[in-house]
Length: 403
Length: 232
Image 1: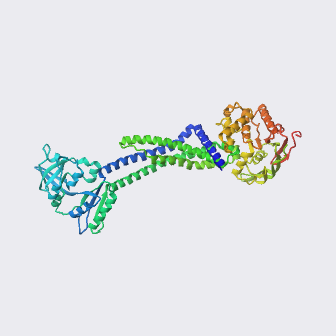
Image 2: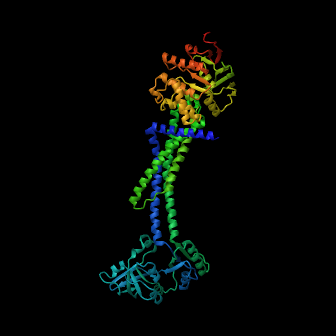
């Protein structure tokens, strides 16, 4: 038994040597054939690596702004149209919750002197918002708990609003009219602090006032949107379930009264889309691999025909069909693998260049490399099978007669 | 000389289907040979002598009849078994030496040993010894194209002998050679025969056939004992 394994090994090694010899013997033809596999693997590797680089940079920008927060939007039921202060306090009191920021929007007409602006986004928030985003206010003061409790008529305005109403004037201490009511400007904030994606997602307001004041203006005692800040290390999915359970009770188990969205779930969706895109692209690229495989099959069939005499001779000298088959299989396997490895190399170089151009970070994707190499190995064996079988079945007499 | 039977054939028929018509290539061939014999099969082209060689050489199986080689029934063997039998018992020499052009003389001689699963070192040792035996010790690393016709045929003889087969089966071994080199090859065959090796030589050339101790003639697939060289 051991001897048999040994002699098989000896023969396999000889097959590898002979295959390399044959591949070298037909340099141009071999190169053109493996070029097909090489292009396919290059495409697969470059696409997967580039897409994963892009998706990596998107998801990192997502998590930088959305880590540890949940967004809740409430549509309410017939009996209860939103969250009361007591409801919010209950959410706030949950173990996993660090604090909440209500968001009450007010679409208002804002004026100062003769300047009148309609369609200004006015948002009611609380002091906690400024605690969580402590670098937001760059001039004056942020809103504080006293403002929340006493529903004071003060506001923090964006730089854009400063330019609109107070160009060349210090805005702090000035008076603005929002929906006809008099507000004192106490601070100015830099609106793009939250990052581009975050701002787009949250809808950055122009003017922030105490949410209690906003509710009063809206003549409403309920809040329909709020952001939950989670304690550090809390799993957002678990916290979301906890909040959903609590709010289900608050809304008397009516269906579809609210949705809790976690940034990680948005991120997950994003990731799924990216994964789908990358497998779609890889699928398209792998068509090139199949075409390359057909090229290999074509070359191997030609080779078998050309080497009919050699095959017949080897058979006459005692080669059994299996040994002939394995020799040709190894040859197509080697051909495909050389193409695959060159493709991996070219793919990595190409994706490094692409990542550089796109400005995303280049991450070595081992999965893509394994896929590329594995795919080319499989192509070599699958498309080499038929020619190898044909070779092994050649009748030695016919083969020798073909001189 | 050993008088043990090397192989015996009885009523061997071989039919081919050609263009929808059965052609009887071999008809009721009965032939047996003893170990150490030197036999010529003499026949014109188309007589069926190549087909007979293929059957003796276990490259082909008969349509009917019985063939026992060294005590083993050959007619029912499958391709793998036939290959194993060839690898152990038979060394082939073809008309135009049939060396693999990309391999050196040494590698060509090593070839049968690869399929027999002999280790590289042992393979090399035996191939070198065999090339020395045929007088090519200084041509081992030459490619076939760098060798003369006679040298190529000697490499083929070395390759046929390297597996130490019981039977040397030669098909027109001098067919592609000039008279002088042909004579050299025939002298080599004579030496091998003197060493006790069983040799069967297929030829259409009476002068070549006459070198063997025993001649059989084959015409139109029918065999007839031609007596010894002295008789011919």
